[in-house]
Length: 80
Image (cartoon, rainbow, N blue to C red; front, side, top):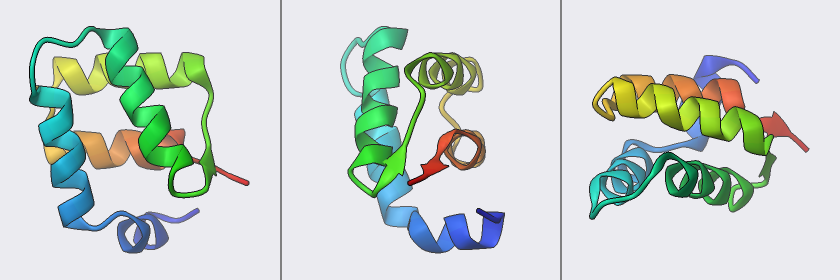
């Protein structure tokens, strides 16, 4: 899937809501990975649990910035 198609799939509103969910409360990297998996599977994408954990760690290290979150989702989503 190209970056342009992904941007059309994940709206700015959806990405912002996911970011807010990731920033709310105290969650660990496993919970963050689960949120990424739920977000993607809810939109018809497959996702590797291990890759989701790795992506969650990278998003966390980047301060949960929207560009990093979007890039990680693009790399993580598996078209079903």
